[in-house]
Image (cartoon, rainbow, N blue to C red; front, top):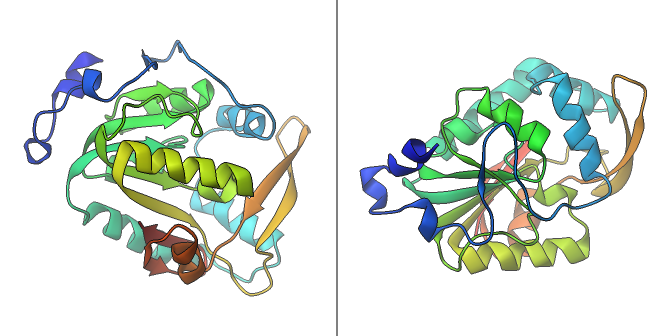
Length: 238
């Protein structure tokens, strides 16, 4: 584990895990963790055992909201978002809400992937991403002040309630100079925010809060600027 932290990209300067982590510990597939959040996060933890999400899952999601779409439409936007992520200046980073590692391998520089779910981090560790992982709370980041240059958050900001959003942005700005948010776009007819009912393979039903974004409005909300404005994806830097 230590070797993956120590292999820091030369463009990022001298950087070690002890300079980044506060009370958190690095975790492997066995998982040591700190504070956990209740509620809808359980859904994402339980969903991890069903495997990595794919474009076909995204297509089913949007069709379930009544959006006319094809896998090629979604894939084209996802590819452009990945291109923009890879084109960012290499830096030290914390990926908050890393999930199963959808974008982890695309992030330039050296950093850690953080998620509240041990099950999700197991999936991430089994994939191609090499970033060390930390289990922690997005609203109480176990990271030292100004420890990294960038916080990257994909498909987590849109799961936060109004009070949680303010806390998350303050935490991101406490630990990093830059915040990059990738989240769900808002095709015509899709509500800006609502509670959804999600069903897992075993028939369990969970209630999950979800927002969908116009890139310009999201940029104004977090005092940033749009980098990508699509039907299915948006990307904003702040």
